[in-house]
Length: 251
Image (cartoon, rainbow, N blue to C red; front, side, top):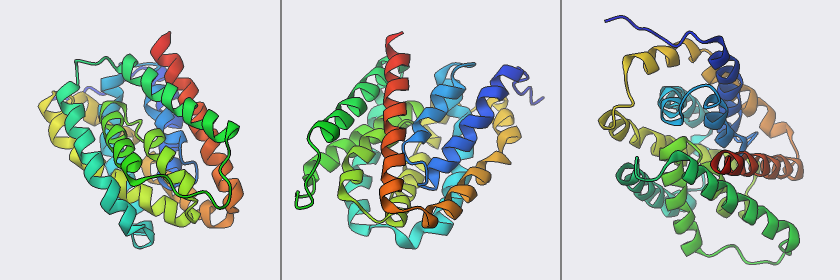
């Protein structure tokens, strides 16, 4: 059976920066920007196909991120968020095809922008209590669901984790661990839904060399960036992601 990969040059014009951006996000350095990767790739192909092509690349990025960051994760946060995220992927499997990708994009984008508006208009004081655990579980479900549909799981989970003001390396390690398990759980459902085919996997193979490059660059840069700058970049990524997803959903 021939591996008839995508040959359209416009696809690769979108895919190359999308994969690099996802790699940077996987390292934690450009946290929030990773949710832009699938929408960028979807400028030239349908969202489900873009999600399928990105899945094996995420596997490589996750493996690299875990190797470099696993020991710095926040174990208590993982125990809270991971079961919720896996529940969200089950929900995504059940509702896939019922809710359009545009509807999901619009909802995620709107919620992301509302979170950022709340942070801007009502900034937390240094003595503010951490967000409640029930909110973390709820946003974990939303993250698993949106990650399953379009690999856009970072805005919901970031809305809970960013206010905790973890050290940048701890934040990066916790997010890397969470999404490594979530992405691994998608393989069976994606295959069952018919998204894992020869053409998508052959196209992903062409993009494989880019997968570790973005992660490596981000991991090297993260320890050298001040925490305040790190979080400004993260919030900027969430704003751009929210605006792009909302635009994609409404246009």
